[in-house]
Image: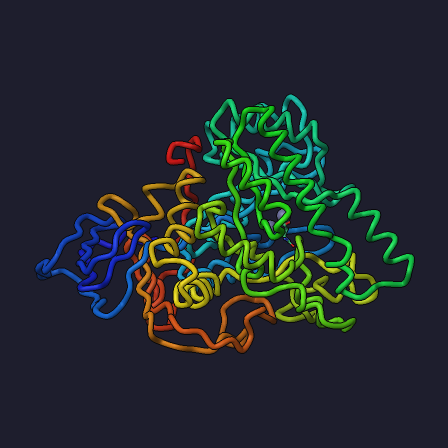
Length: 475
Ligand code: URP
Ligand code: ZN
Ligand code: ZN
């Protein structure tokens, strides 16, 4: 990205951080915020952005996305071009995506491959978690190297999907023990993979092939069991642990208990669990494939518990798990998408889009409804992910010295969400037809305006890799 040499003055907006709420001006020089004050004079070379009547947030940080991510025969339909453009339109200026350790290769190879994919293509800043699929002494040494020298300090491990990415308990424990000693963190996909696998085989043998059986074969109690096991492994390893895409009340219960005991357990949930529930799996039609993500949608009761936990800090982040696969084959050239599982739900690639809608739907359905405060909204979508994953205070706040990643948001403007007007390469959004109030108007990444009133005005591919340091300094 070309450096902005001019000063930019964002004038008269209502600045919201995780703790502040006041009307002020922001001065940006180059890539950073250099001054926050009131009635600041614009100099001769100053570009002035009028923010009166608008909310001013730090750029969103989404700690869980899958751009151009390969799982089995399927690749997510957003790459770092379409996916990060979509993120920017939704007010997110930093993502933490995934680098997959392929069989027999090092986590360091995974990082190198992911860097190549994102490279000059990403429109917003990015980091990586490595998905660790195999652990041995060399892998542990390479993970330590990644924390120290590659700016990658978090690693996802799967307790589900046996035979592909699942790790056994001993491997998870070994990895936790190592990262606990070196300032890293393991993020767990907590579902009991082998039991779920059995339930899937039984359902298919009985002729239950439609997408709704995806949900029926992944019971909440098996997310609870794996979450409890993950916490115990982390306790023994004396390491912090992070649970991705937490959806079940049975899992939340264990997170709350552990946190009450002062154990460093953290967890995110995702907009799809906050706005949809298991009643969505209404019939045996293939259209239900749009709700095939793991874990699946849960009960209304679980959903209410998630909202409460967001308020009480038992859940710390809202991430999207943006993992889009199209409902139709061939949309924008994407193949091996959801129809792969037309005759067998277990072959439907798991995942849904969400990176473009996160900030708006959480504002509309969380802040406007009084479920969370404005400050908490910023904390959940920007500050806490930045803090937990080693990006703060560069990212996640509006402060002198922080990157000038800024979102101007109109809290009154209403619009209808539709896949047709979004920027993702996915052919659907779960929020199709939803009327929401609150709209991203302008987005700045390190001082450069990317989005202005629904138009892309920034340079292409200006995102940078953000090296993350040791974790835990801000939590
Ligand atoms: O269904 C999901 N969540 N797909 C993405 C992969 C993962 O487990 O996060
Ligand atoms: Zn997962
Ligand atoms: Zn995911």
